[in-house]
Amino acid sequence: MSHETPHIADHADNDPREDPEALLIAALLWNRDTTQAVNLTQTLTPADFYSTDYAAIFATISQQLKSGRPYDPASVRTALHAEGDQSGILTDNIDGLITMLTNLEHIPPKITDYAEAVASNSYRRQYRHMVERLNRQAHTAPEKDLYPLLVKEGKKQRRIKDRYYRNHKDTPQERH
Image 1 (cartoon, rainbow, N blue to C red):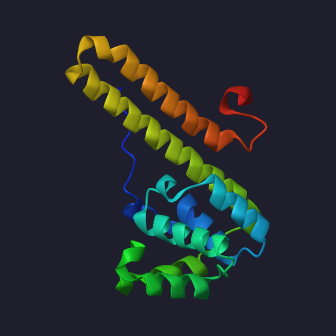
Image 2: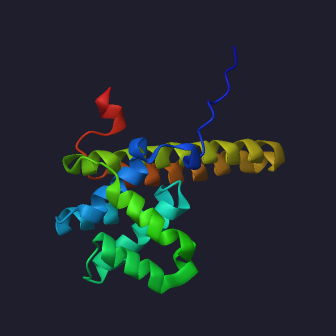
């Protein structure tokens, strides 16, 4: 029996109908509650997305909201095309991706659930990266630096956790 961390499938293999990142973007594209959309784009960041395509669309939606511009599918598609390949998505892929997302069946009232799933997945990914960094440092750093490196990583992870749960009444510790 292996005690290794289970492999997380590459996002390219995920069915968008079951992918919280895709569902969140789809819900945001159709969401007309600007206050809710602003809150979500201020809580999450593009770095929270595993898919670079979804991260680029999320960044564009965020920028549209910050600029007071529409963030509907047509407006986001236009903004992505205006950015060209600098958007982070190959220009040839923009139309198909936006079409897929706009046709994705999502449940509008679940938009915050989708956002929480994206945040949770990101938090766990960052935690795994922290463990990998600490493991590497355990093999390479001078012994006198090990504890300070652990403290530094712990503080960084605490800030990340606080960002994800600052808008929630119950933190993961309180849910148990």
